Amino acid sequence: MKRKINKKRITRSSFGAGMLYLLPSILLFGIFLFYPMFKTLYLSLFWTDTQGNPVQYVGLENFMYLFESPSFMTSIKATLLFVLYTVPVGIVLALILALLANENVKGIGFFRTMFSSTIGMSVAASSVIWMLMYNPAIGIFNKILSAIHLPELQWLLDPDYALISVAISTIWMNTGFSFLILLGGLQNIDERLYENARIAGVGTWYKLRNITLPMLSPTLFFVVTVSIIGAFQSFGQIDILTGGGPMESTNVIVYAIYKDAFINYDVGLASAQAVLLFFCILFVTILQFKIGERRVHYQ
Image 1: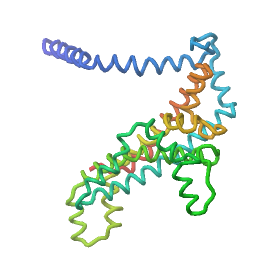
Image 2: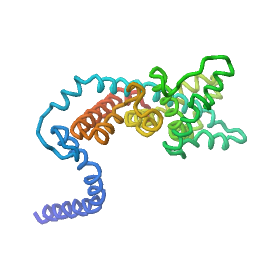
Image 3: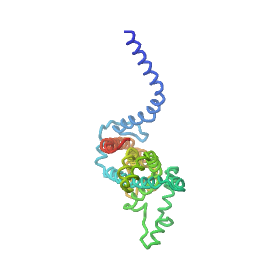
């Protein structure tokens, strides 16, 4: 009986000590994550004044309005296209660069630094650089088109090219991060696997398909998940390069939330969009874990 009482005391003492260690993190998460999340969910059920204060409870009317709004449907389309443009191309490019930088040749450190250099640049600075390159009068892209006798383009002013132009700049910005993570994954692969493959006399493509990619699959899974979430949340480059235009062709959901909250002062509608975006990202992430993780090979 005494042993049971002592065990209970030890368990309570351990639980109390554990909660004490976790308290700073719980407070930070509560203030900066859980409170804003529940506040957003609460405001999505109300009409609000220009200060963001709830005025009238409307239930799901904000959500019903969004699904009937052509502007919101355009935002969904732009967001999905943006994710489709940036994630696959960005990951494939980063993987190719990582495979090249993983070779043990003289001077490879310089190229590793160059390939990862975009990670050290802010979104604002990178966007300004790309804005200059896209400039119709002085931009380098139109200079190249003119040099090869092709018609010049309004990269950021034409609805047919604006989203692709922003996607290209986003791929460039995100390549450094994906490259570093994938290069780290490649360098953690057991070298004995490649030695056995060389002894067996198999080719480069066989090693890539049957050794490199399976061993790299946990890292690839992480990079894909983080890249998709990041693409859904992209804002800075769109705000600087296009401001959601032209004709709302780059008005992704995050930028639409910003406009409704801080330009139109409709915090209730912006909160409803934020809730929908949260559940969309949550659904995509769960889907990735349900489907994608089955193909992940853990050592």
